[in-house]
Image (cartoon, rainbow, N blue to C red; front, side):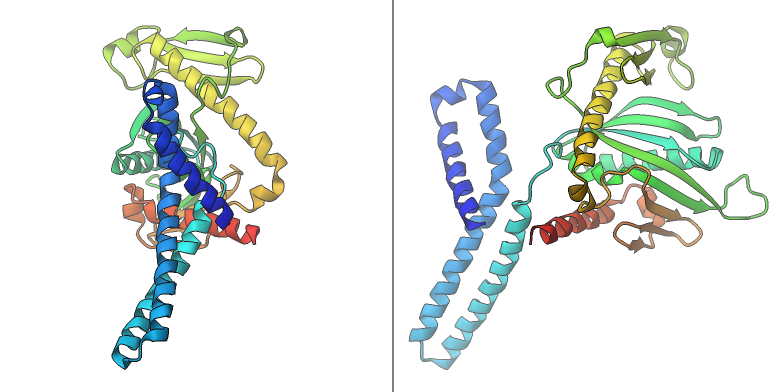
Amino acid sequence: MFDRLEDTLLRFEEVLSLLSEPDVASDPKRFQALMKEQSDLSPLVEAYKAYKTCNQDIDDSLAMLQEESDDEMREMLKEELNASKARAEELEEKLKILLLPKDPNDDKNVIVEIRAGAGGDEAALFAAEIYRMYVHYAESRRWKVETMDVEEIGIGGMKYVSFMVAGQGAYSVLKYESGVHRVQRVPETESGGRIHTSTITVAIMPEAEEVDVEIDLNDCKFDVFRASGNGGQCVNTTDSAVRLTHIPTGIVISCQDEKSQLKNKDKALKVLRAKLYDMECRKVHDAEAEARRSQVGTGDRSEKIRTYNFPQGRVTDHRIKLTLYRLDSIMNGDIQEIIDALIAADQAAKLAKMK
């Protein structure tokens, strides 16, 4: 571990040196790559430097204790020694986490798909509420949300919605949301006051760049049609909506959110690229069964991950046995506590596997 840390420190210093060279500054692509590497290495280097300082403080305190005879001074030195030891232990655990292999997709934007499952109109209503929950959460992080496609029902529900969340580290945070979300409540249409259980599925896919997935347009069939549902005058009166069919995989994507046919086509290709990239990632993921089992619910979309119980005002994440009794704030986008707990559990599982 410490050999790796020393190598990282040397590389960090080398990157800083390279960034100050004129030929690097004049090469935007290389300069940007080095700046990103510096940014990625900084947290690890800062923690390691702090750890080394702590160890030096421990050595200094021990040396002074051997020479000091004054009782009051010895007590003060012992307190400083204990504080330094505790801090060093904290930093060592932090370093272990920072050294965990990083998911190459963590810095990417995400495309989110929400589909109503069992429960009919009630499932569609819940899908719309979960969509709004993610939008509120993204806004709290100052991330940008862009709707790709939506299939609404007349009472304010959504049978399907896809949207992009663009922001630093969006995938690293939202990837744990993939799976089946279950709601338990009395639907507005239920006259007998019985609690119903409905489900929706959430899929989180990293946005793929053109370098990640190459799409042959000869494999794509584009159809245009008139958009339906809410929209401006131009949206509903021109053939601006686009349906993209990827012939080799049978994937069909519709985009009708934009007034421009060209923009809808571009959005459809973004979604297709993300789906194809996600399929490839899942093939690798499935091949590494042991690694998959060590992760906290970032893979199987048929897995029931969370229950939202309205009568009791509670939300339970089944993967980490976490229950919170503040359903209202969570539905308004306050999901950071759940995400932090999932990240911590995932890191703990990976650390345990390394031992």
